[in-house]
Image (cartoon, rainbow, N blue to C red; front, side, top):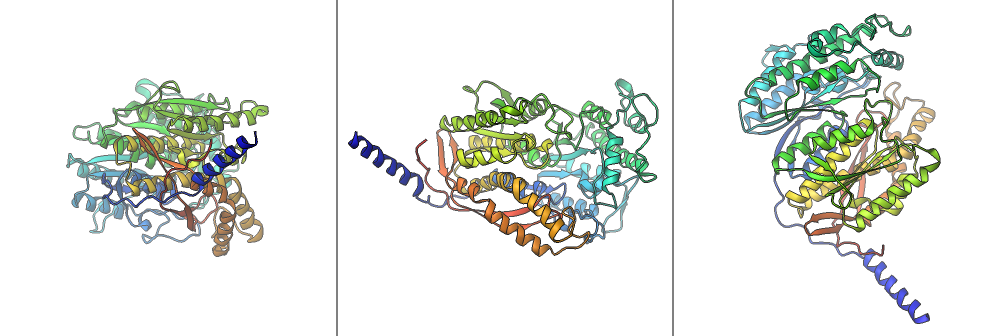
Length: 587
């Protein structure tokens, strides 16, 4: 027995050494894969629309060409203006930038129409009526003329592949922009959630939808909240009508001959399960989409979806099979108050969009694990344990896996702590759970499908692409596991209680932002250790047939910033070290 214990001790020591003392792999000498250059006009300058889209594009071999940030940046109240003298993007300069890309021979485009026509998502919720655009040569175009000229120019080259991103306006505009406050937001969201007359058949037109905006389901005018300023509801409906008519014009033009190389992807912004003001808009847009176009829940994931679909077309994607497992028991409910469909319906629509067919666990090419809010509070630990076991079982059997945390923070920090302690984070194809529930499904599936397709069809040994993928994965997990759960709450309190400022806008009143960044850096240094160590101990999938992995290597975080000068979201640079030979520790 003593000799047996000594032998087991020796084997354990050797296993630990092989798992911890990893040999660096030689740097990739071959040229990286080149999928082409994509001209990208983002929705705005938040991380989900900017650097995270760039990470995903790089992981697929694309080079992302973007305008200067000042041309598409959004500034909240008190934060000054862009070079164009406004708080929003420069529509004329963006239009001319796209024309220059076309003149230079670009053939791939992903363009946010909220940015091109309104100056960004936030501005699109506020603009009313006609807002002419004056080009650098003095030519003045209406918004409809600018849209039509843009489409005609890009349609002239049949080699172009163009994804146009649009949105269904959310139920209330943005707090802290154009003097719009929380009272107005709450009042208008309630106003927008009220059911309108349900239109069908020949009555489902843009004109009839707009005419019925002020009316309840009974046909009588809806009385706005008494706390709303005079005219607030009228201005709100005018902004909705402008958005509706611009999208109507877009779909009308694209139904004409000569636009088969265009695809439209419309995102449904913050919504409600109620029969709200959005219901007729959504039905009308669905009715007028062409084959290949789509309308899906989520807005801040539009860039991810478009990049992925562009690559799927590029590589001749014929779809894949996927097994979907839910943990928590609430998949038949909306994940939060801002979703308009049950979670399961949203997942199924995204599966169809990416060409995934559901099948059983043992035969599926991909595994999709979805954590929901707990149907039974007393079983929270059980639901979490089931998820952890499924992740580890999939790694043991070499099953590529996507994890979606759609629990809306119902488990606090416990699930993330368990994942960091008991699973290999860097092994996953994708993870999402940060910020709005409306975007977690689209974010996780676009990243997961993109990575799977790349491993099947791309150049899996491309070091640059693999590093970009690790940044994509790490960005999601660091922000969710470390920032959202602990650091962000502490920063809210620090800005509010210590600096006597507003966590939602560092400029009203002005506070010392250097102190906020110092606090952020300190908190992130203390709070990210477990996740970064997990990545360093994880293997990254770099091949499927045959199945191959490498060690993720060391990650570093630096250059923190708050793009909108508020605590809600932040950006960082993620350094990815040299990949190592696979870890071979004991299970």
